Length: 294
Length: 96
Image 1 (cartoon, chains in turn brown, orange):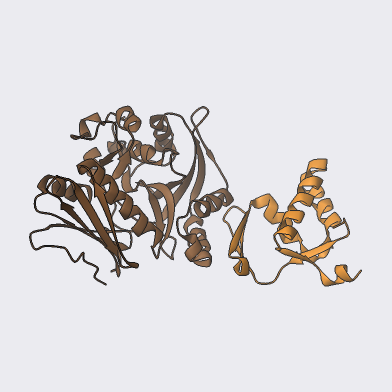
Image 2 (cartoon, rainbow over the protein chains, first blue to last red):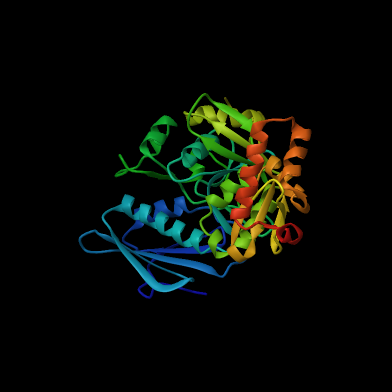
């Protein structure tokens, strides 16, 4: 399936990446060289997965007054989608929103709202709703040596293996400051959510599917603690936070079941994400824990 | 339902065991999944179309010690299972 924007031009600059089971092709008008560079950096990681027929094509154009227009079309919908953006920061934010909507809702994988990292013994996921602190905990974990799969979604294939969805991290201003990442801010970012390439925080990005080693249920209160929980709680959380289980309910249950068969389940209570990661380090160490500085 | 009611699993359900003793029950016709922890799964397994609710409660009390909480927990669970159409009254009990 090809779904290019008919207005694309030969001079457009391209960024192509496969995220989960969707090939994303981004074309940026030649005049927007800086924006192209930023998006190429943010979408530098492509998943090494089975060939896919799913496509999302986006094109960013610029008007004489400097306003940008993001046009997009996907293999699942013949309707083109077009939105005006005032500046680069807003454009990046819109591209990422469109990416999440298209890749996750229409996926053939079971997609679950979750933070996902790679630990020494496999993939660790924390399913949770928006605002629960998933991305902040992912960023804090990456800073301590965990590998990156996603700050947005756990994508399970039919065998229950986690396929990476390595979109850029999106952090709110509090998280950026708390984690000491203010130096990564760029012009126009002040006060807004910041999109960060995972390699910018020193993370290794996972590009292949992996087995789930643990599901961590987040609780943002009380003293920091990491305690065992039941598999039933993990299954319920993974199904409850799924984006697309309604499209394939039976297959969703099967994928979750396969995923949790060998996974530990924990409940993590914390307030400061750095405390949360300290607890994870003891129970679910990162791939190269011996080289991680405290 | 009374203590003498006998329940059995409805047909057409997919029951998937979890590694720590719990269960997921998937009801295809309702496209709904129900997750039971290990304790609830133990009671589910006893609803075999032969044992009455009273005997299930008695067996739970033998296994885990007597208590009002055990009785009310079992009754609440079987009512939930019945309300969600995961169990039926067995035909022999229904005919009584």
